Length: 438
Image 1 (cartoon, rainbow, N blue to C red):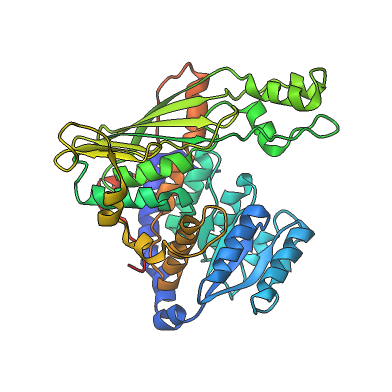
Image 2 (cartoon, rainbow, N blue to C red):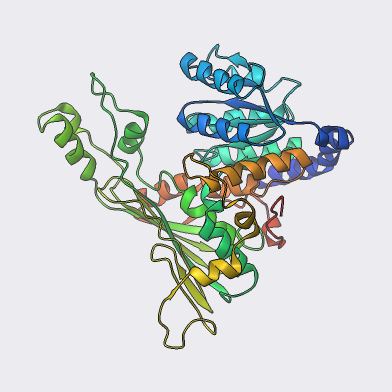
């Protein structure tokens, strides 16, 4: 049970800070020996997404994979063979049941654990990993409830071990270029972001007994922004959330749901029982977040309609605006005086982020390419140096909690819902994003 008592949480945090230096200090006292060794990763969940992360990890110099956990023997065997093909010893497999990851995390020969399980297992795996004094890296979202968010935060504070959500959208080329420009003040004081997870994901499955696939069941039972971090993460990074600002409150509203029933009728026939499923999730959800410093962020969740992929990525400040879906920009004092949109080419040439300057030409034919490589590389470099990752447990909590808060707002006629302050006031301390290897 996670306490909701703020006084107790403050006590836990103060105790954690007192022990944090000891918890990490003992490991850091092994310092150069640890840093000179390869980073040893354990993987939990090696389906399609986990296999992408595993393949990326094996591309990186100085990485070993001694152990892999998956209850699907086919997935586990495929992952073990993949490691062997790269010239490493066959990783030990863990597949005795859904919680066999608890044996894996206790291994002495692991520095970090990465999970790409179904999302309801992300927090349990990360809590177990940090409890065993391992760095944690999790696929998105990091948690599915406010209680799980607090559990992640309190475990990280108690153990002194980080948990990084592997949010690849934060490493898109345009995000890092704009981040570089924001850091130089070219957009002036930031005001507004518009972002969205928008793509056709109607490929839900209905089994022979009319049972829904996992995502189909989720949409049947929940109404809100069910997958917020791809959109919210870059906006939070650029606006300094948890680094001088924080999410304050949100309001959320959903349209009615019609597209999934029509999709199933087209696939299964209009009289199939699957077409009569009552999907709770509206076809389009719109949430608006206001930060403590007065910025606004509009988030769209639009995956149930026929449409191309588009995440918008509008960044607006008092001195300029970037429109990612148009690939256009306007910066006062730099762009044409007629206030015409300007192509972004010269800005990429002048303000390309050092990470993309260094890695942008890598031939990576996996998922979203270079940004996938970068997010994992940054995590591994944090593990190797025994230092804080670019995205910390407070980011994981603040971005993941959007789902339950949006559901709460939708259910209450779009009433405002306050964000928990997972940092307990420490968001007021301004700090820069840290990037490794530049």
